Length: 529
Image 1 (cartoon, rainbow, N blue to C red):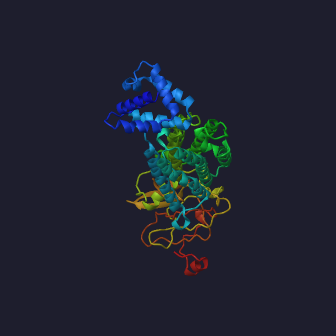
Image 2 (image 1 turned 90 degrees about the horizontal axis):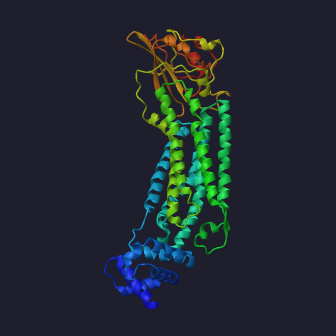
Image 3 (image 1 turned 180 degrees about the vertical axis):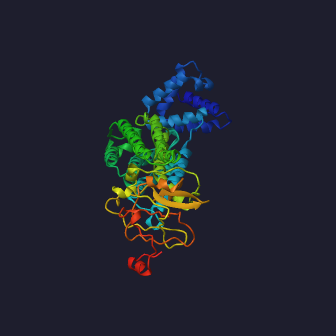
């Protein structure tokens, strides 16, 4: 028997490797590497087949024979012995080794870098001392970065340990380490996804004051908040004892795991449903905005861009089928791992897009064009901005050709608005408004400039005549509003109002005194140009 085994192994290695090697060394390696149970299965299988022991070409390509040997090894040997045999025979057959470790590390590093950059840009856009408005949604995105950071950097460690290679090519101790890291990555993944959704929902609460819409947002926010402890706890106790979750792979430890596959499918399904709800939720409110179709479509596309996260979640389901029943975990878990990482990174990036867009307009203001459309925001639009417009006859007031509102600055004529009242202090305006009327070529030409108050997002909208201003809800201003006459040059056909972040309706435009103020009045009001 020993002579037969030695002869077989010698031919086995020589023919499989296809090169002249020391047969004695190969024999010693085979006897040292292969377990006795595997040697018995190989000899028994070859003796029952039509292949000769010396015809390795026949043995290597006989699928039935290889299947029989595999079944014998799996039933006669332990998991560790089976993996050792598989690794030796794959090398002997000259089979190429699969290696996707670079996907795990590269996608983790690249996606994580873009996500971190997006958060940095968002923070830069929202910090108050940089001209932004900080809110709870910004805190939520920072909290979401807490689980994202280890999820990103551990992808490098997983690749180093062998995630992305076949399990029989990975050392046994590293298999345990990979599953140990993967166990914690599951919790980081679930937490980061839910926190990102919470940040988006909190952002909705900042800009949409519609009560029915806010109730839906609060309900969805509660579900997202409960999603974290619910599935994180389920992940922690998926196996008892807990360490059995990363030690069960070799079959040499005692313990019990619950239906991990069902838990994975439930968390993925609920996550996809929440994604769809969060993405589609603001579309109806956005459709009410009184702006050009092109601009409205652009804003909607920015919100709908998060739909790519849902697509990634659906693609991830393809590999969820074999998640809990895999015998090649270091290979089968690879696509689930990098798709999960991509999903989290893209979610963070799209959650930061509105603030990044704001920062872009602040750093690179759009050139003011001369074409546009009539911007006629109605009551619903005013409500969506969190503005308080007058509801009495003052809303019907219009600016005449002799009305002129300005400050003492050279080219910027403005009105200072008082602090926000209790009616609008909870909301930030989506758009800030700037009325500008210029006398161009002897004809009246009005521009209304709007922009994101938290983002300096601007657009320029011309109106053909001053009479069209009557269609606008007319905001009035506090008694501290400073009013000065126009410069000496003839600008009787001009209205200029500096855009501000909040406007309180207190007096109508016809109540504003256009007479020059005396210095004593300026000192008493405490306003300086």
